[in-house]
Length: 153
Image 1 (tube, rainbow, N blue to C red):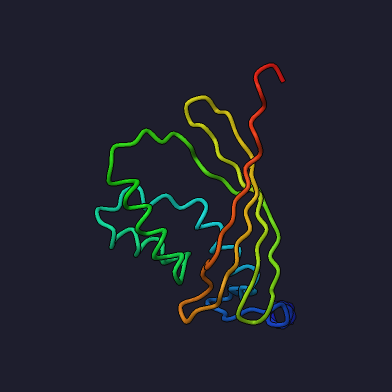
Image 2: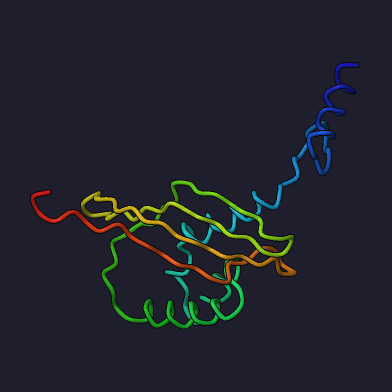
């Protein structure tokens, strides 16, 4: 009887399937969107890409439309030359707002950490996402970084 009650509660909680007694909860659209934003901010696989096509393939997990084309070209141009980039991006939190069943807006709090010194700068991002056949994709992104303190502040 206990197992029936647990399975009933799990099914009411939005599970998608039960395998060997375990339930996998269904992701809400907000969770799906947040996963895309989190990947866009923290996935650094593009650093190891060997071509612009590979960059685009990696970024297409998170971005769509003309933004994907522009980013792919700009990222490839950046990584195909010697660089000394020492910053690690992070995501502190944010808010997902569904604008419709096909569009969403995310306000995110970001960090950028200098891996040499440990200094962290904070910023905000606004992402617009569209639901495509392969899932949610960022189609517009805007960033605002806090000014660094002047020396002596």
